[in-house]
Image (cartoon, rainbow over all chains, first blue to last red; front, side, top):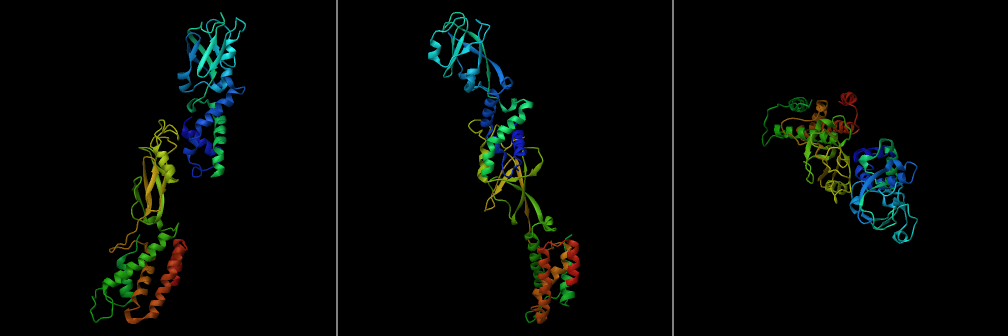
Length: 174
Length: 227
């Protein structure tokens, strides 16, 4: 979907004319609506529709996500507890722990653990329970902030409803 | 078809004033010279034209409409009354479409949006790009300066400048032009205020009909009755 299409859909959805609501005003709300929409999907039973795999480089047990978070369609940090990390030393996904101090505490070996510390992903290996053992390219599966162009056809109207709701207070004020 | 100056001149001089078309007048002569008669005709036509132009949706107004190119930030060409409409070519090569009026401040914000951060608050496209949601808007401020977003714009204006060679109002108003001219001329010509008054009333009735935007066919009937 393009910005022009989205704004046209919203005009129809709200049944307002472009004279009362210029398209630029709608477009300016698209980033916020995309975030709301992505988070709503991530929290719903449709969450698998907006999940994808990221390759991350673990070096001595940690991976910087700075570049991944700055790229297009970044993983949703607000939903990091739902992230799934696969490393080579286990067939099971790594378990999320709430913070770095908790990661430092002892846990049963055999399962891997991870936590998000700022923009750094920290791990405790499954094989040895080591905080520094993993150096490899791992797969992170996460819900992400979808871009306008990649909203699937079946979810277009759901997004338009979110965008319209974001814009609607402006309509009432006009 | 515009009214004919030749016909009106004949009506006024030959029919109304019972005078020769070619007399030149003299200092001692209290009759009008032909240039004065023409001036009276054109002044009467001015009033008819302005009545038409000032009457929104008048059936004869399109005859006066002209499209002129608009430059962003520049004054629109001289015109009568307000700008009727602005049509905008959203992107190069596209057709012109009816523009939407928007505040100049917003238009300037849209124009500043290049689509690249930090100038992408209004999306990823510039206002001249095809399919940009930022194009198609215009504003004209109180000084007649135009602002628009899109590739190019044209304004529809009422373009009327008095011609001293031909009349411009529709030929249906031939009688009315003559009445208006005679109303002015009879005050002196033959010193006949009664005739001047009669023609003045006929002229004013005609102007009122124009301002009432009476359809052309009915107007013709009423003007014949009034005459």
